[in-house]
Structure formats: C-alpha cells, structure tokens
Image (tube, rainbow over all chains, first blue to last red; front, side, top):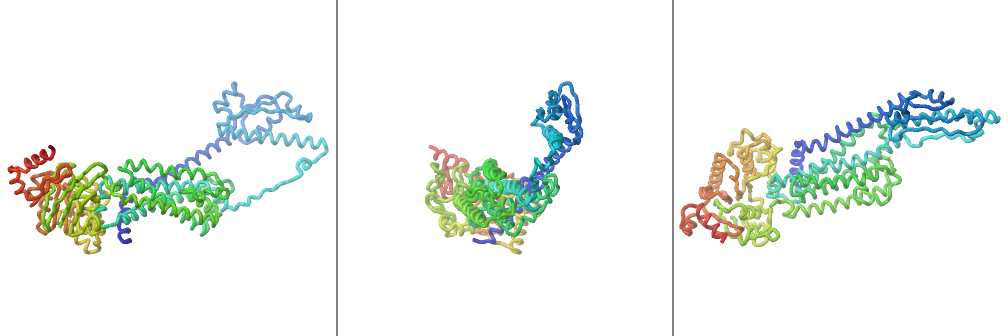
Length: 393
Length: 242
C-alpha cells in the first residue's frame, strides 16, 4: 500500500473535518464545554440543596418531652406550630412532624420504652436531611437515658459496649480517586469514542456520496482500500480527540471540587505507566472498532440523513456496556465481560483507573478487541469495494 | 484510443446499457447523445472504472477497464455534470492540489500546473477562496481544473454544461475546442444537439440503453434525409420507442 497516498487523503480529510462546524461542535465543544458545564451545574445544584437543608430545618412537635430540648440544640432546627402540620409537610413548609405520646418521659424514667412517631417526606431531600437531624437528637436523648439507667444499676458505659472499634480506610488517596473515576470516566470515554467519530464517519462516506466527491475520488488511480484506510484513520483520530477532550474536561470538573468525596485528596497517581499503556491501547482499539462500524453504516446509507439515523445504533451499542459496568467494582467484573465486544474495553478502562491492571484480563481484553476490530474492518473493506455501496445510481 | 466493445450493464433486473459498441480515435472529440436516463452516464462510469460492465469490455489507451482499472484511471480525467463533486470547505487551489497529489504530482510541478490552469480558466481572483460560496460557473471551472490537473490523454465530459448560464457554457465550449487543438481525446455526453454538432466530428446516439447510431453527423443527416439535428434525434427516439 502506498503510504504517501494514504497520508495525502488523511491530511485532506482532517483539514476538511476541522473546517466543519458540525464536526467541531460534536468533537470539541460538547466534551470540552458542555460536559463540564452540566457537571458543574449538577454539583452546584446539589450543594445548594444541601446547604439550604442544613441552614433551616423547620419541624413541628406535638407533646412534651426533654427530647424537645435536644431537638432545639441541633443546628438549624426551628420548632414551628402550624395549624395544619400534615399539609405544611406536604407543601414543604415543614420538613418533619415529631409526635411524642403522653407520659413519654415518665415511661423512660421508669425503665420502660416508649414509641416516637416521625412523619417526613421521602421524596424531598431537605425532609430526608431533617429526619437525620431528628435521629441524631433521639440518639443523644437515648444515650442520656441509658447512662442514667447504668448509673442507677451501678454499671459503667463500658458494660454495654465492651468492644471499641477503630476503622482505618485502607484505600490510598490515589485508590479512592481511581475508584471514584472508575465509575464515571469509562462511561464518558466510551461514549465520547462512539459519538466523537459519528459526524466524521457520516460526512466522509454518506456525505461524500451525496455531494458526488466520492465518485470523483474513485476515478483517481487510488485503491479503494487506501481511501478506506485514510478515512478510518481520520474517524479514529476524531474519536480519540473527543475522548481526550472528555478526559481533560472531567479531570477539570473533578479538580473543581464539588464532586469530591469528603476527605479525599484528588490524586492521579493511580495512572502508572502500565495502566496508561493499557488505557491507551484500549482507547485506540475501541476507536478503531467504532470507526469501522460507523464507516460500514455510512457506506450502507444512501444519504447523509440516513447515515445519521444509523449512527444512533453505534452510540446505543456503546451505552449498554458502559451503563451495565458503571456500578460494578473493577474486582467484581465477570470474566465473560473481558471477551464481549465493547464490554472488554469498558472493563479494561475501569481496571486502569482503579490501578489494578490484571495481565490476563489485559491479554484477553486487548486480544479479543483486536479480533473484533479486524473483523469489522475486513467487512467494511469488502463493502467499500462493492460498486453499489459507494456509488449512487 | 477508446474502444467500447459490446458493453452491457444491468442493475438487478434493469438493463441500463445493452450491447453498446463504438470507438473514439486519438485526438477526436466524440459526442454521446441521448435523453436523460438513456445510459450515457452509466457508460461514462464504466469507462471511469467506477462501475464494471456486466458483459463486454472497454479499452482506453489499450488498457481494459475490467483487468487494468488503475492504468485506465491514470490516463483519464472525468468531469461529471450536475453536482460537480468538489469539497466545499476547501479552497479552489486545495481542491485541485488534492487531486494533483493523488495523481502523483508534487512540489513545484504541481504549483506550476495549478497556476497554469488558473490562468487558462481565469480563476486567479478566486483560486484561494473556499469553494462553498462559489457560483455554478465558478465551481465548474474548478472542476475542470481538477479534471485536467494531471494532463490526461483522455477526457470524459458527462453533460458538463448542465446548469451553466450562456456565458459559462460558451467558455466551456471554447475550452473543449482548445483541448481538441492540443490533441486530447474527448468523449462529450449531452442531450443538446446544437452543442454536440459544434464540437464533435462523430457521434453515438443511445436510447433506452441501446445504441441507435454511431458515425459522422453528415452521414446521419444523409441517412435520415433531414437537416435539423433535433428533428433527426426525435425521429430516432420515436423510432426506438416503437
């Protein structure tokens, strides 16, 4: 194969694509601007709700007890007395209603137990937070009662809590960051790889067929395989650019802070040379697989619009494994997933981000990916050589 | 230079071209006449190796479109009418240079050829502008330059004046006459009889995929006993329809 010709076509395709507004928006603007913006808005909205929930916790209390003093001592708690508490709770004016039965304190002082009723709205995050505040006050009051009973019985606090447990998180900051990123990043990377090449693949075959430029290209002394190779490379590059842009924008979002887990220092130390190599190989093979599929569909399509419709299938194909694997911890990924197409790429991405690259998984995952890529590219090349697929009549 | 030998092309059950035979000599401008859908473009596409004949063969410069398609493509330049197939996001120069490189032209040789074509077709004013905003006539000039960039021996022009205004069509006909002077072999398809008569020494008439006539215009007039080419064409088409 004359490589110079492939580079000539590739260079032209890249120049053409980088001057196309649709491609630029799909490849750069969405990953670099829209994704961080959406994440930022979501995180800001979440932290605002949390801030408001902590700052003002209006609750209604019926009945009397020392528990009310504990409730009042909780930060943000205001005891209100609306005429219709149930309606106020529904309307969000109250976050919870605490109903204290008669003789509540008397029953507790006499060594018995008492039942407390708390009404809250599980669909309202602020009401759920109020429930946790009430739990905390009840816990404090219960501790007072237990301490009093133990004193009366001549026992110390250790009598009912003989074992003191201390917990230490074994995961390093790198591991915690990687674990957190292993959930979301493979999803974003795989979706970017699938969607980043869509505009390019549609334009480079279905679009060229529609505009008549592919026909002109086929009259030059260039083999169809050389044309396909150059187009495949161009689509792969656009996919990889889109995935890299997604990675960069997500790193930026995570560095901004709102999504960080409390107490975790964001660290990218989990990306060892080995995991970076696995990640790079996985991304390239996934990009080749998606590019092959997208070019096949674009070749089958009779028009640009038809091509766009077919491309939805590729994005869905990427979404299914990404979402299925998203909640699974890297060490719990079933062995079968390292063999299935796209699943294997997502699984390897998760391992790479978790910093736990398994050589056998890598071998199987990359090997099967290479096989799928070869099959798809061979099928695309076969289709591309068929006169009916690339020329409109 | 061009030998079309008992060529047929079928798309499924539809016969687009049936047993067509004619030949074009070196340095000749040959007209291919026919209504829309007669099979002219399919014949041109087979010559350009985009489509393969179902039966028969075409030889260009001695090379078979079936067995030596790359050699055939090296020797031809094809210009399609209607949609001229240019890259709208590239400049005129980039469009021409891209095709030049695909034919193996590089460096100063390519630059000189582009400058030469730009002067010849009066494109200096817009050679470095993107093609997307061009008029039909300007696009056609760029497409001609792209077709000629590698200085092909054989030029296939498939309804090249379709959609052009009178001035642009005249410019185009002058250019074909100039290429004829240079000794190029030109196959010119059209459904415009006057245009064909002005440019071509011999013609072939295709109707519903079959060849109705191949020879000189004078012999055709003598055979039909009519002088007006439009009348002759209509008579042949009606005869073919019966």
